[in-house]
Image 1 (cartoon, rainbow, N blue to C red):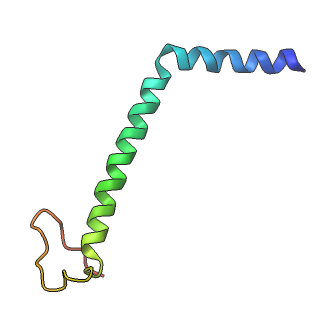
Image 2: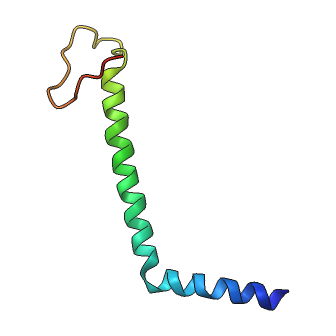
Length: 66
């Protein structure tokens, strides 16, 4: 059983060493940027924080109707 599991792990290790880690880092980076952008838009469209009630929405942030 141990030999079988080693045979399954070896291709995964080769894939990571062969460049799959750079693709994984790219996917994580793009996902992080998307989360920050979408989170910022949601935050700006939510209730204004204390002190920001009278301020206008930045032009870059789209208005989302409820």
